[in-house]
Length: 112
Image (cartoon, rainbow, N blue to C red):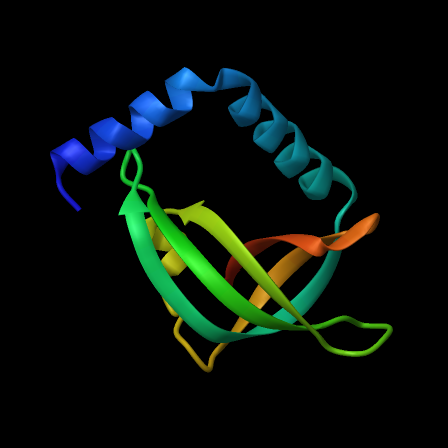
């Protein structure tokens, strides 16, 4: 993705600041009260880049919660190069799961 794609993403965020704030609030909630877990990356696709060097990635994941059955999740997140290192389709990732909504989660990085 080039400079114009980054500019379009920034303009889109600026046009709807409330959506951006809601997303930040959701991320802060999951960071504070989320449950640690692992997931298998079924597929991942870069759909764009963000200002500051982040990559917008669409993930299809199979989540393996500590308690309960595995389940599928689709999520789109902006991750930086350091977080993306070691993440590949078929690999395992560390996730933080929203206890109130198991379909909402954050990808933290590759599982070791």
